[in-house]
Amino acid sequence: MKELRNSFLIFCILVNISIIYSTSTFRFTSSDATVTIDGNTYTGAQVVADGPTNAQRITFNFANGQKCLESEFYSNNARYQICNSTGNTNICSGYYISLDFPAYDLINPNNNSTLSPGATQTIAGLTCREYSYTYQGVSTKIYAQNTNSSRICKIIQTGNGLDRTIVFNTFATSTTTLTPPNDYPSCIQDVQCGSAIDLALVIDQSGSINTTEFQQQTTYVKNLVNSFVMGNLGVKITYILFSSSVNVTSQLTGTKSTIINAIDNTVQAGGETNIGDAILTAHNELKSTRGRAGVPNTIILLTDGVANLPLESATGVSPGLYAFNAATTAKNAGDTIFVVSVGVTNTTSLASISSGPGYIASVSDFAALQSTLTQILQTVCDGELSPCESGGLSCNNNEFCGCGSCICTVTPSVCGSRGTFNANDCSCTCSGNWENVNGDLTCSTCKQFSCSNGGTRNPYLYM
Image: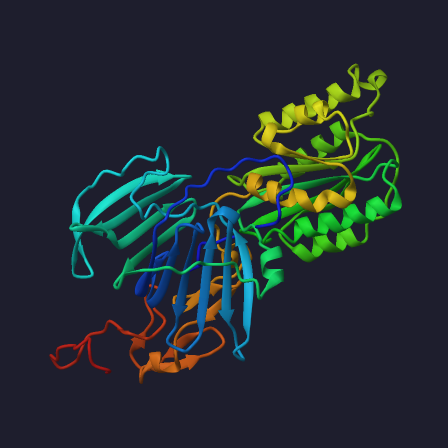
């Protein structure tokens, strides 16, 4: 089964950021829904839509008894998956998403006007009319019953990496209020971004930061790294330290353990604050052969001061202007720069380095750094890349991408008498003249061959 487009963060936001979400009073449930994600179809799912809470939950039930409960809380930019793993132990994973509650009430979220009806289509035995809109990069088609527009028949969502269709075979109004999975507190706290990003973490290690503050900063940087699903198809990170000079401590990589190890082994150098050369070094690393074409480049700069190196006598311009020029070069080449300012009273020069008003977070001290994570993720994370895809996993057509792993959805009987079931990769090894084609792994296709003595081949019989 192909990857489930997720993705992939929610923390309490204590910085200045304003996001508007549409609200709806529309609530309903479907005890029998057919969900298609990236071309893979799952029957017998249950859906609960809760407009007042701005949330939706889908429960996937698989033939082998495993299940995955997927809750999307749009105001929190979070998708939570609770999956039943081997040994009947539930695990929970959280991913950042950039979706909004579907306009089941048929109110256009762009302008609060009533959506215009389109063509009709027969769905689940009902005559249903199409209502379409595009919002936040996602094109949505909602089909409502022609004679009762409050009865939703189907929804199709495409764009920003999302490709999902839900057919509501049954439908009933609901009073259910959805809540995040509070039984799994670490799941709520550790929501991850799975977008494809080449990211430079540019961290101040100057002498103005004392030992306690540097340890607080190190802990924060590790939490920031753990907020991303890293991999060759997901987030790749380079770790750069700067003070008077700049040190690329870890080159751009998709291996999280490499970055965490580099952070754990950091020794503070002390010195001055050379922001300009730090930005240029980060830009050059992102544009190196280790970077990926077509992937957004982002620099996150964390500092407790303003630039005071290199000296004007060496460059002909002030340290602040040198940093501004370096940032301009990087931004003109397509880099996004997000600045985290710690204890800086006048942030004007740092704001000029950033990519705009929404790309700077200011806190009073290092202990407050954790509060910036939400703004960072809401700013740099984009799209609905699967945590399996971004983490380098490849689920086959018999598997479901849930909780960062490929969950087998079928029983050994799927192979029938045509092959042997392989539990390790949830597939069938075909026997005789049966084969797997076009992604099917259940040995359902008879090989093409010619019969001897004038016989006629019957493709439906085991030969």
